[in-house]
Length: 261
Image (cartoon, rainbow, N blue to C red; front, side, top):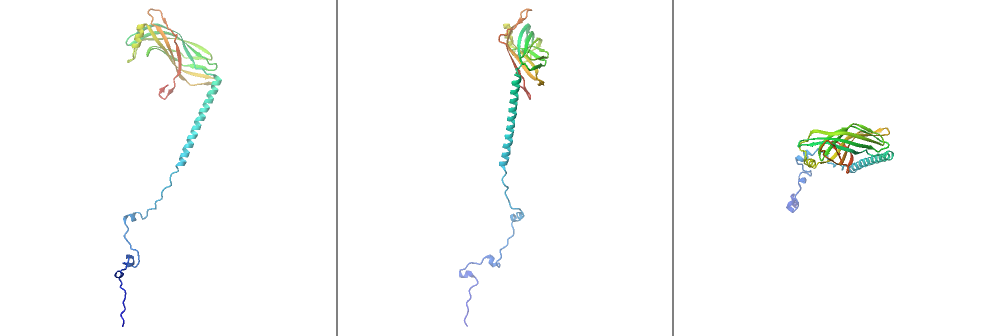
């Protein structure tokens, strides 16, 4: 009987490759225990990036708002300019003007701490408007020599009708009035020695204007008259001021919050 030769069951014996673990386990995939990352992320939904914000839309809205605001401001300014032009054409407004008619000094004395003076003042207020009336409140008056206040007084309230000239007279005086601490009076002392005082008259008041049936609110104004010189009297005769360089300016005093312009 002839013996049969069978091939070896170990393929490595004949130079073959070793069977894979999957083949060794009957062809099934191997199973391993899940790690922590797999356990924690098992129920987490898949990450989906958010779409970028619509920046172009927001920028367009801001530009539109700015454009409308600019157009509104431009329209208001245009209407104000038209109204001002119409008002000027109809009324030809002029601001009130003031001048000093005369100024006399009858008494003056200066010490290191106080001042005594007596002035007779006559002012002229003019209204050159043909369709505007001015209403003045009580007017405060002070006389300055340099920066030192050497006399105070006031004018009563008055009304100036159209094309009107009003004469204002009062006595401005100080009787041994204390000079505020820290006030430099060296220039005033030098003027007293020379017997000639440079003076400035300053008025402050509130004024309202009326045209047709419209009356404005109060506007604070300051009138400053400079370029006045007067000699100090040596006897009972009052000295008269020289006003060859007199100049009076009227300035509105506009208050913005806590500042006055």
